[in-house]
Length: 111
Length: 115
Image (cartoon, rainbow over all chains, first blue to last red; front, top):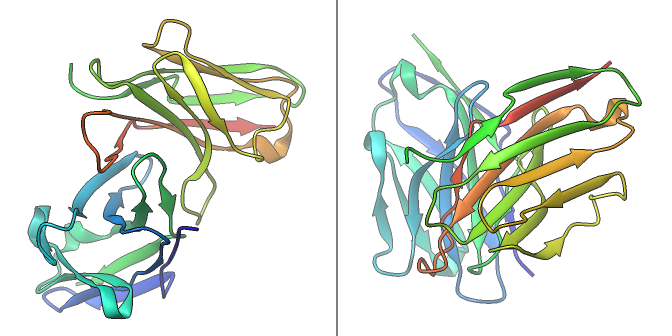
């Protein structure tokens, strides 16, 4: 069975501070892992994905995530938050033909 | 082709009425998915098609919900006898069989409000 747990439904950071959004997964098969971002009243946009090529994955807008098999984690980070990063972030796991999303983390950036 | 498009973007209806949403996927994508998203939640899987075949339906999809993809291109999601609990954002996504990661490309969503 596949599932995703996102710790912290709301995260607030100051502009310029480190962003850390946590995601732990459960998968019975080697997973593909994704982070999507959703801005208000919009669909989901892919930030980055892990496909087993490299454990550190770089995405758009300065975000990156590290796959840690021993910890079953795929946390999302960004060294310096911008106001434009305020959005909802979803972690997802896929065995290839189906996606399982976490409940999301709402990121607030404080000026 | 610029991406997945959904229509309408917003729909307000009265309880008991029927509504239909349309999704046009990225043209070369074989798979098409419908998800439902309520406030503060992640997308919940409803159903998916591979070409014109509906391969999987969630238990969330009651018999008031029906989805079609008659020619393997666009898809429709119909909700009959709407209830207030149907109020949500309905998201469509598509993916290519050629991409073994199954990466989903989402539309902007159709927001349903049932009064």
